[in-house]
Length: 235
Ligand code: ADE
Image (cartoon, rainbow, N blue to C red; front, side):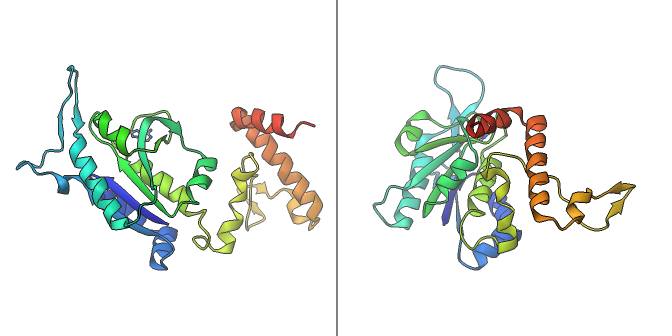
């Protein structure tokens, strides 16, 4: 997977990606990251990327042309006529979830566009954006953290990025339930004992207990997911 990120803060994207599992995957060539500073494509002497909004109102907008020039440069570097998905991270998008992460992980190239100020001139969005995606119903100061969240969730689904132990932990969401509680040594800590069933060595009972815990936890913490799971699993 090759990620391309259009941003005013490339160092934030690079710092966010250059750690832990993702760093290891980039080092091994399974992932690559290229950042493009939209300001580098600005021709005016003050390197201003934004301007006032037609029709008035507070705040500034990123101008269409510099975003477009950045996009054209990325496409010429990718060097193919393939359609590449361009994701604009915005609170006005549909909410990113595990299913979307799985869908995006099948792509070879992904371009992210991170907005700032009050947004971006609509005309360039119409020309280049294929997906409008939000990470939740709150407003960030810019799209960089949202892009990092999405790249992280997508990356861990790409074969070879996680080692086998880590991959085992992907089950959590894939069945529509939250993860059951887990314990490691010691057997007793702060007077709290590890549930007896987990020490029993009885595999079927352990599985049964874990499923019950997952269901109960989902019901309590995420009633929305629970209702969905129940509707799909009611016979
Ligand atoms: N940019 C600002 N807020 C955002 C959000 N919630 N999701 C994606 N991009 C954003």
